[in-house]
Image 1 (spheres, rainbow, N blue to C red):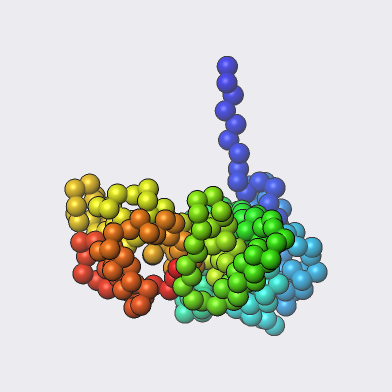
Image 2 (image 1 turned 90 degrees about the vertical axis):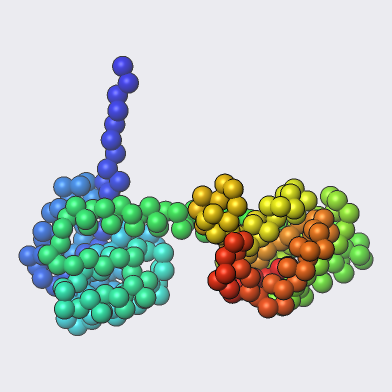
Length: 292
């Protein structure tokens, strides 16, 4: 037979609990240890900062922090911890009277805030979600590094005068926010140059979205670029973002742009000039920050 084994996502994780109420801290510690997690307690905000600062990177998987503590508040401790390691998930625990402070904590990088008295089932769910969110962020960071290395100009082969001039121009383009037209025959590496521009620019931590204009029919291209509203055409069962929205704050690479019709190029020109567009079937004017 096949044996099914259910794994506890919290088992083996190390938590730092920053709570100056000893009874609350001990209850949290016991609940976490029942889940198979390890738990260390900081009796105030100052101790939490010291313990975090003196630990090796990645030692604590998550921090549970009361917002009202003596010596150093949860908000102050959160700011310091996020300054040391922005990717460490922090869940803030707050009394009803300090909801405004909890919202401020979210702005400072806390993953979530929970109200006292704690519902441990809700806390467990939030902790599991925070760990999954943290894992995905780390995977995304590693993937960006790999892709960034792939598009590093140092990996583009060629030592002739023409290639040197091309790489110099690519570096200049990366430093600006100007719209760029890359020309060249099929297979000469236009996408590689587009990627090199993006991953060496100030937009490198935001999306690099690609669209092959020749691979999409004229009727669908507008929807692919700008998105559509629910019911805009047969099969539009829900609202959908287009490539411009997906590339917000990043770079949009339009491959084979010469295959676009003149009518579509006119619509694209408006976006390039005005940085605004409407979804197919919609009336709302959307603004976008995209480098093309």
